Length: 77
Ligand SMILES: [Zn+2]
Ligand SMILES: [Zn+2]
Image (tube, rainbow, N blue to C red; front, side, top):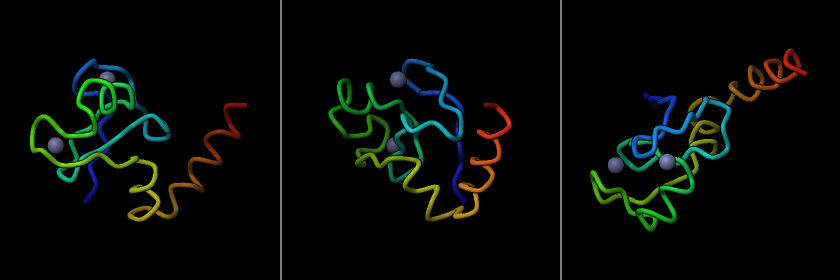
């Protein structure tokens, strides 16, 4: 089960579930793109795994989230 954490574990930046900036490692540590790339050079400091875009992983685990996301965005705009 994919755990969707709402903030970057390093800089505490807010990373809502629809954020394209969220990166997760193999063990689901969650960081923003800036921390993952600039600070950790794409290697998780907790477990040494590589980062993947969380959006990409969400699409695999929750293909329907796009729908919810879409309606959420529509409601907002
Ligand atoms: Zn960060
Ligand atoms: Zn990790």
